[in-house]
Amino acid sequence: MKKTKLPRTVEEFMAYAWAMEVEASDRYAELADLMGTHHNREVADLFAKLARIEGKHRDQIAAQMGWTKAPDAAVFRWETPEGPETTDYGDLHYLMQPWHALKLAEHNERRAVEFFERFAAARVPADVRAAALEMAGEEREHVRLIGEWLAKVPPPEPGWDEDMDPPAVAD
Amino acid sequence: MNEVACNAAPAPAMRGPNDYKSDVKPVWCPGCGDFGVVNALAKAMAKMALEPKDVAVVSGIGCSSRIPAYMASYGFHGVHGRALAAGTGLKVARPDLTVIVTGGDGDGYSIGGNHFLHACRRNVDMTYIVMDNRVYGMTKGQPSPTTEPDWDSKLSPDGTGLREFQPLVIALTSGANFIARGFTGDPNGLAEIIEQAVRHPGFSFVEVLSPCVTFRPEQKEWKKIVKADALKPTADMTRAARRLLRDTGFELGVLYAGERPPYAPRGPRALRTPSELEARFAL
Image (cartoon, rainbow over all chains, first blue to last red; front, side, top):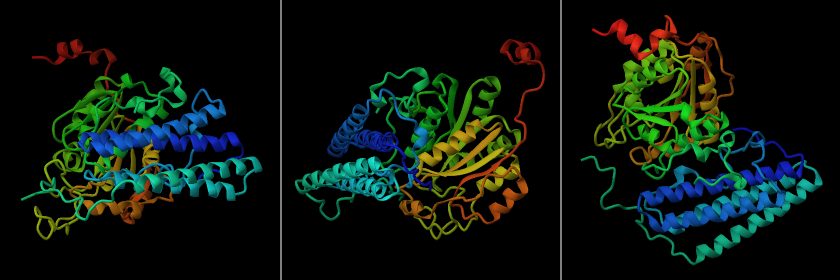
């Protein structure tokens, strides 16, 4: 996959951060819709909540930077196929429970921490490094908050993915 | 889903990917690869700033063929295997439209296999996206033309023993003018490929590896196997054919971008109006 270009300015760096939140928010909203379609209401609601949270982060960045339109998409080149906070479609299961959704969210936040830490450790101007460290700190806080959230959610019992009427019956 | 970045009003020239998706929610299984194609197609359309009214998405039958309903452009959900026939007719009648034909491996390579050959040969200026999951998902898991010969299932005990259909080889030898392979786990990369396919004149064929998590859960491993093709696209058929001899089926990117002029109807333009055609051909 392509290499992420190193940002030369805080503006460019924040464009990455913004794009990451846009992708994450859009994907959570998409996942909320699809779990709703499959009548998994609890997980749909949770994904919708995560979409709203990421959407708030997206808007905060735009407000902080004073952007009135989207930054140039041409600068975005993730090292991975998608942004660090974007949930892979393939990680879903129609019988998944809120615990699974939160584990995915926690994984995404951890990847975001690593992403920003890599920027901070790279050869970037001092103001970009400071911004990267600040963002990494914020993402670390998100990991902690999701950890607290997870502690309140019961983990799935063995056999959670067993379906008495499975779609794959071919007898 | 249709939130606009930075709360800016969506001026026609500034549509985001979500503006190319309809309000109809996909009914595919959670984890299905086809979500990645809707995502990539919407991103490609936004990047090209296409007007939804100038795009028609045409399909056949199958899980993946539901895509027209999920896009905000014009759409036609046709009959099994006949998506290319419908798309060809539409493009010839309305050359101003961007025609994108979509479908699955069963629809395109088996039921519609003959149309695939001749769509490549005719080289009408349209894009054909095939979501290949190597199984008939909608009808509960029968082997398709691209299923591995040793895929053992209740419906194919010990496997079919049949050699797989080779879509890229067939496309190249039949005359497709643009041939590429994408992966649904990389929607951003796939969007770039789709954009190139749409922009390239003539018949563009994009084979998309799209895992079926319900009937082929082992395909979840594809994301660990796929790799970007380090080679640049070639306009030389011989070189493209040599590359296909080494192809593992998991190299992603553009294989071939040919220079054959697309099909253009012969004869005066006036003959293309329905009344002119009727006057000349109707019994």
